[in-house]
Length: 320
Ligand code: AVJ
Image 1 (cartoon, helix red, strand yellow):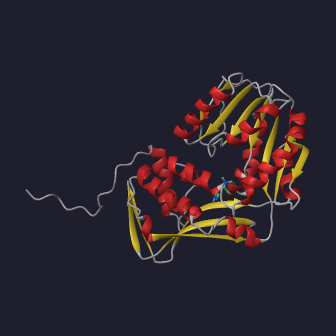
Image 2 (image 1 turned 90 degrees about the vertical axis):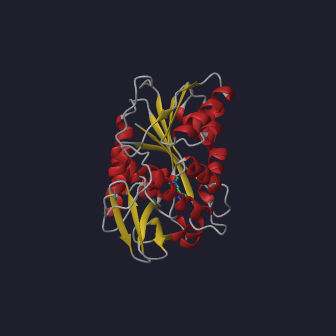
Image 3 (image 1 turned 180 degrees about the vertical axis):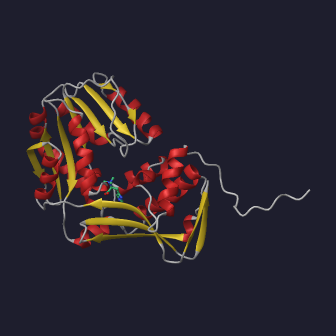
C-alpha cells in the first residue's frame, strides 16, 4: 500500500487554540507579514526580556526605576494607601513590588499573558508581603479588558509601567486607555510609564544591543510560533532588524529572511523571498505633550508628571 500523496508538508503539533492559530495565520499571510508582540512572551521570551532590562543600552527600565526611586513618595501621596493595584503586563512583578512599601496597596492584581511566569512571581510575593491580597490574572491585554468580580471597583489604581503602551499605535493606545478609564471608579487612577522621543542613535542601540540579547528575544518568537501554530520556522534562517522610524515616531522590529524559504504551519504556508521581513513589534515614543493629549482623549486628567534629568522617560499619574 502506497501512502497517498499530499501537497502539504508535515508540520509540528500546534499547542495554541484555534483563535490563536487563526490570528497568527492571518498575520503571516498578510502582504506585509506581521505578528503580535505578545508572542515574544513564552517562558524563555519573558526571561530574555528580563535580560534586556539589564543591558547597558536598554535605558528605559533603569531610567524609570530611577524616577520611581526619586519620586515614589510623591506618587504615593497622589495615590494614597489601601488601593487595589492592578498591574498591566506584570511580568516578574518586580516594579510594583518595589513600590509596595510606599504605596501600601490593600490588594495587588498582577495581570499577564505569561501564565507560569506570573504564578511563580505571585507565589514569591505572597511570602514577602503577607498583608497584601494577591490576585494574579492571566489575561491577553490585546483583548477587551474584562475583570472578574474578585477585584473590587472602589480604589482601583492601574499600574502600566515600562512604556508597554508603546506597543499600541496611538489610535489603539487611546482605545486601550479608554477601556482602563471605564474600569476605574470615580476615585481611581492610572500610574503609567512612557518612553520619550530622543536621539535616534540612543533608540537604535537600545533595540539592537551589542551582545545580541534583543536579537535572541526577537528570534525566540519563531520558536514560540512553532509551538503555538505547529510551524516549522528555522531561527537560523532569519536575522533581527531594528530601527527608529522617525516619521512614525516608533522603533520597528522585524525578522528578515536570510534566504528564500517556505514556512509551513497548521493550516497554512508562505514563501518568503530573501530579504523579506516579518514585522514583529512597534515601540512608539512620545513627547510629554503628545502623551498628555492621549490620556485626556481617553478621559483621564493628568495630575502628576515625573521625568529624569535628560527627559528620556516619564511617569505620569492620571486621575479619573
Ligand atoms: C515591553 C514593549 C516596553 O518596547 O521597549 C524591548 C519590548 N522590545 N526590546 C519595548 C522590547 C525590544 C519593550 N516593551
